[in-house]
Image 1 (spheres, helix red, strand yellow):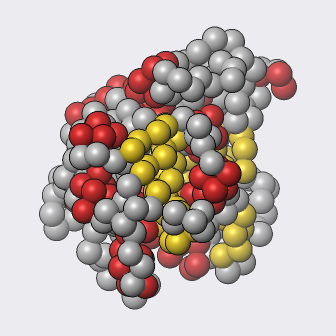
Image 2 (image 1 turned 180 degrees about the horizontal axis):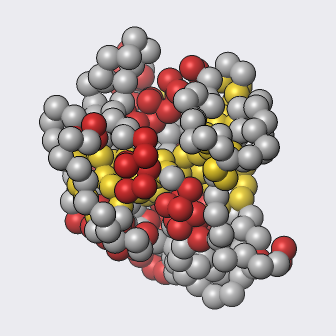
Length: 382
């Protein structure tokens, strides 16, 4: 059903996809193969608002003067069929004269789905199911977020070696290095919202804005969300100049995500404090974990996390090193940046059933997907 060149190209596409950032959009890679089986160009998606993987590959071919007429595009997700911040990839493929498309899994996000049908209607040969399991695993938490209709959740912790986020007197500026702070502000500039608890708001009075290296406010700013039953003071710094603040009067992470999703948020970064961090982790609602680990010891002070409801080692949460978005471990100044994603618990059923909507009828996953408790949703085509 698939040629050796197409199989090799899909492996390259999946590797290329890892160069992109996780968030509201899935990680996607695309490779164009010539009629002779040679790889012509490779593209990947660099984040919301940038060219999709297919469009990136087509643009590279244009810059190199490569004619794609009659070629085959191999892509890790069904090409999108909608106009968002970028145009539909299905139409870009048709316009480029690409004769055949091979993709791994269907796009479950309603606004983006249907690209395969559009391609077939235009006379493009379309086949799917190549490396379906690997492609699903690449974006497993994104798929879960889409199915659950909730934002993709990134949880961020800046802590000492002994897992403290503040000293005994409450001081916490600055545990992280300037390089870690700059990286965090880069994350802030690409998420839809930042979430903190009311305790953090009242104690730290944060601005929660994204700022550049000079300390100036960046062009792209997230919604600032506060979770908790207490209100937001009128003079709180979080109001900023634009007043883009949302109060979530709940202590339930599921309810908070439901309200954020209704407000149009598709990627939220949870920044603290320890109660909020622990609540999201305990609920199994964290899709991406980023820890800035400073080479500092305090011995006492505020712990990064509280009770997760774990009473025995057998119940411990398992996390996996994530090679996407810059890699599993980076050195930022004196700090280490650790990047992780939730691991697979022991199978106990299906929290996400791939079904015919995800995997094409002729290709089925080789085994049931592992069960996830508290798993949820996210959004947005690639």
